[in-house]
Length: 432
Ligand SMILES: *Cc1c(COP(=O)(O)O)cnc(C)c1O
Image (cartoon, rainbow, N blue to C red; front, side, top):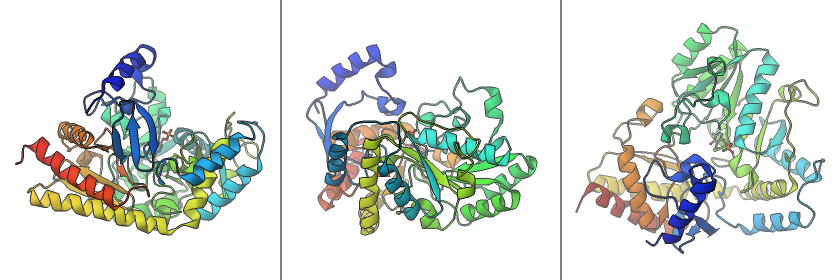
């Protein structure tokens, strides 16, 4: 595989950009080698500057559930640019997208648009604190909620990959108000709430974590959190930045039939443009300024081009709900193929799958939380990543990231991916 142009671009990028990248996991530190510079993408394919093509299993880290350059989204963006790029004033499109979101996610009665998932979670926790008048909140080990200070404590995704579970720059004072519980452990949460009686504003979690690899909720875990929050007057926040509009039109809360008080959204909601949102019960959302006292604002929030892209994406998903069965089927074929291979090669690695998300963990333990996720052989994942790349399959450069499917992945790509997986495993494990 020729990578000369990417190599020279990476050298140049490092002169002007910290680490040569604008988001750390892109630097390939966890998997070795240099990052590829991407020139363009279409459907299921990424093309780098050297002219290599890859079938994509990241899809921009989740947003592009319809693949790259989907005609409906492209058209919406082009049309919107004709009318101007930003107004800093209300537009009709913002009502349309808010209306559609409340239809697709019924627990969201009112919604505020922001520009990233990070902004959504920061704002949701501030709102929960303002609404309840309490300071502390509970998060789960290995869950990632963006890079807001109070979340960078045992955070998943890049923060594990980069070996920085606790970032310098986050003050002790901030960290003190973030209480940590092991994921999927209801009893631990109950004890934590008991030990901080009357002081917990919110419990925030990824209902289906994708930021330590894909992890499924244990039976009764989400329901138990709902009951606990009701009993103790705690705001339950589902961070559906990754799972929202991906696992179902209504996200993980629809799949598992548990209703949070607030939901944070991002990724898919922008159709590939930078968008986030938070929403939920009317009486809580009314607490946000200008109706309420909790301040939150954004110069480019509700940007007309981003709203056009997001609306086109959500409308397409809303009008074509069979997409979710299709994605689940595609996921089943790939995971089935991977499992066949593992069995044939006598390998005991564990896999998880839900709809359009799946993970291959290089451990024989069942992965249910941060502890078990950390048992993975990340060195081996790095080699596997490179082996897949050289066979034209682009994965997230981290063991602790789910694989994401798009509707652009068809049977021919599934076959390629399954074969690449078998050949890559044989290569990295010296199996002949
Ligand atoms: C990606 C992600 C975020 C952060 O979103 P950004 O747009 O990267 O700021 C927050 N929560 C979850 C669950 C995510 O997957």
